[in-house]
Length: 247
Image (cartoon, rainbow, N blue to C red; front, side, top):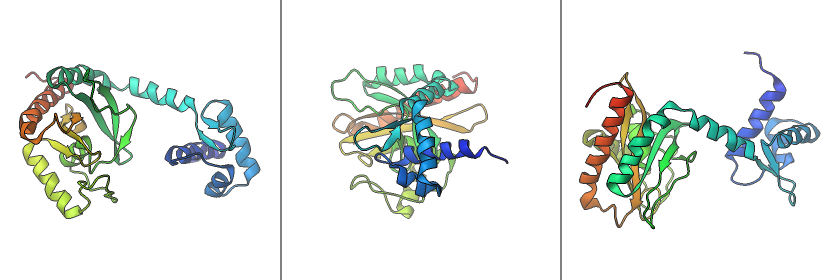
């Protein structure tokens, strides 16, 4: 496939800015692309002019610009799964009192596609558009388990409870498949527990997962089977809606 070189460079720069934990300088971008700094400077000025990059006035380094957020939100708002899932997420919030989330697979991570917040003073929010690991989140483990995906190459620890041994994780995911739902038991964030179940389309293919997240004190392990049964019930109802089935 032939490509427009200047456009390809701009897109690669956006990928670099998105992956960076902090701002990125002209020198770093030039080294990344193997280009001279004057050419990169012109590209960055163009990206900044149209709002896709933003320059820090004090350091002269760059970060993603607000136009990227506008595009991302426009994409999220147009996704049919998000539209279909919204009332089911609201149902989870109404019946559990916890925040409800919808996640899909993206870049070998879980992308939080939507959230309905709880009215509780102490609640667990995850911003729509956030990417999170597959191996230590309930939504991620539901996607891995029921889509029969390969394990991520990196099983990085986020808490002392994160499963970082591949063999142990495989056994855990097999248990997840058998019980029909996934649990995050303070594996991604301390004092937070989550439960999630897969969502299927008309072709019986996993297209996402829905679940709830809450403080560990309220989401205690003794109540987890009851809570998980409710999440599975709502996930099945959403799957039925997506596949045009009744009941």
